[in-house]
Image 1: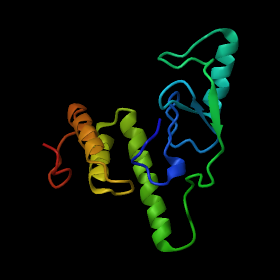
Image 2: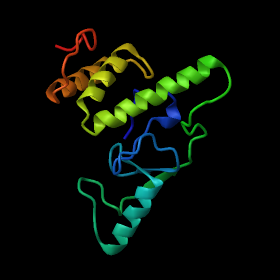
Image 3: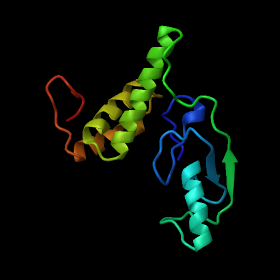
Image 4: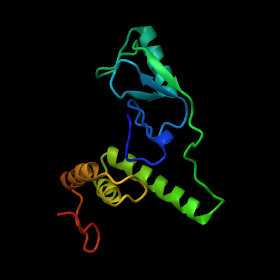
Length: 154
């Protein structure tokens, strides 16, 4: 799945089967399905399922033609040296990715944090529609208001 809010064009895809975010190794995209990407490990599993005659849940079938995309040059690993501004920017991007992973796994507090990060562009591209979505996820997930924190939440 393409994640437009992520910074760094090469790291904008997540695996639609295991949820790995971002895909840092070889990425496989389905030529039939709209926006269906898998990591190397899930592609290998998918091919084994196809050999056994099994399929995935959803519209994607292991027999669909796929295109391989090489591993990105930027693997998303933390910067530990160089200019301080680059190291800090790397840390903020990784914090955003962690918040996105946790929010996708159902953490309401992470969804609230993610909404604010998306609203302000902290570690990501500003995306008001996506921020509104994650704000509703946080609210519906029971994120509680703490005085002075998440003042934007109702």
